[in-house]
Length: 290
Length: 290
DNA sequence: CAATTCGTGCAACAAATGTTTCATGGCCGA
DNA sequence: TCGGCCATGAAACATTTGTTGCACGAATTG
Image 1 (cartoon, helix red, strand yellow):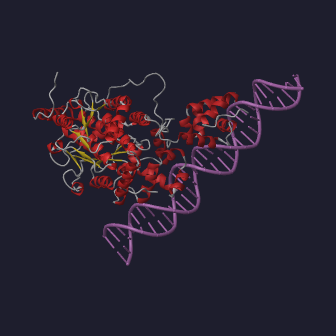
Image 2 (cartoon, rainbow over the protein chains, first blue to last red):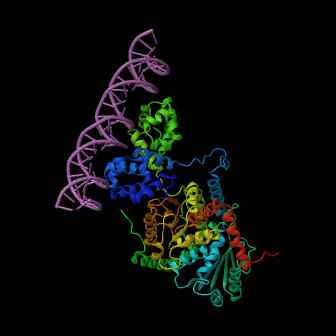
Image 3 (cartoon, chains in turn brown, blue, yellow, cyan):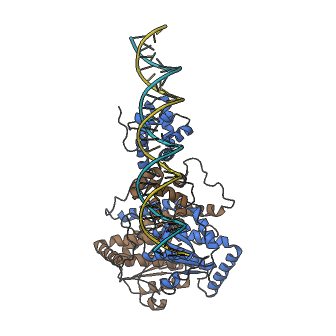
């Protein structure tokens, strides 16, 4: 079979879970859900809280390849040890070579993205959200990898404004939708270099139709930002070998949705609750377990 | 005499430190400097590492007002409990006040997400990427807002492995695809609380089919993480009023795609270039202009 | 200087820990 | 239906845990 990931004891546990006896699965889930208690409290304590036999913990540990509960616990403890992002001098730039170059690269990229997020213009987002709030209808367009951002925005906005939000080209050719833009409506276009013709066309159509144009882009020089009423900038740069980063765009999209939601007040809240109730009634979700 | 600050066991310890006997000061400093080990390892272990007498730990605890080392250790353990989601002190209390409340909220959320990104397990991503690299086919599943992550992953992986990647349910009912999982293939499932039944079904189907299961989730306790060969964790927590954050999941997805691409070597690079050439030929992109 | 207090290490203690064994009961294959 | 297998819980096991009593020595006080 496929071999489990050695990186984390929790991962090993998860991998082995389904192949375990019923009772050991319960105990395993309990450990996974309460791994901090697992490292600090005693086996018997955990057994009492989990409503299981103390011996089950020993057996669980052995079942997933450890010599005993002690060893599993030690592994969990090490996995949880607070990272030594020491306040000391910079050890950050060390070891970028060797077989784990990929790991270092990923870490570096994540740090870079983390640094970029706070640079996102919160004020502009709030302004754009106000525009969305007063829009009679909201269109969303994004192509290539930006499609995912567009669909996320579409999903979240629809949670509380189901009838007034749609993706451009979502139910037919783009051109049909382009002719439907009206003043008083809002059009959101997401894109970065290289810019797709389709996204530029949407932006131009929105402009000519007199709709409110909101551009989420990596530069004010982006063609779809021309004529935009609101331009929300993010950083898409990535280390060589990576695809353009979308975390910034996602963060903007979610913030935009959140602020728009809060502007909607109690009406929006009620709409969201209705939607969630419907989903729950359709048993979309897995019920919480005790 | 002087009442120590009750806020944290560590601060109590520090304030009482100067008035303690010499040997107890040493032990106290050791505990303060290694409080994580203090909560996890045994008294004798610590004594050996600190070069002190085990009894000193009991006496230290009593000297600062606890009934014994056990009680001190319990206090330290509680103080370290991770349930306190964010290390931020100033939470969102400025809601609904003034026109800038939204701006502050957005800024705060972005900072929180930025703090969460470096905690993403880079090593696990590299491991999972290796699994993807050697997979004959790659299935991707995500529902609700996670669908956007799934589609992004689908898009980026397809850029250099066009024939071997597809979204579960992308071309018909999910059930058709569930039966198509085979050993040697990889299935990626993305989800967070509350978990959709559909995503759990995909994970279980992947497991039973013997395919390599990669779970991108907010917790190792997530049902779709059970049986997973690789579990990639992100933080989905958001301030009240916000939707669950997806930036972490997006960052993981993109890192995963990037590392998988780099593992593909020159073959992947060539495939990507072909794809880009095709897009350019179809004049998908706007040509660079002055 | 003597008497005393106090800090310290050692060793023994009872309690609690993780482990193992064994008897039981359910399950599947023959 | 029978026989073997395995999962499960309870109890007994050896070990380790945190604690405490005791002795020794240094520092303090009269």
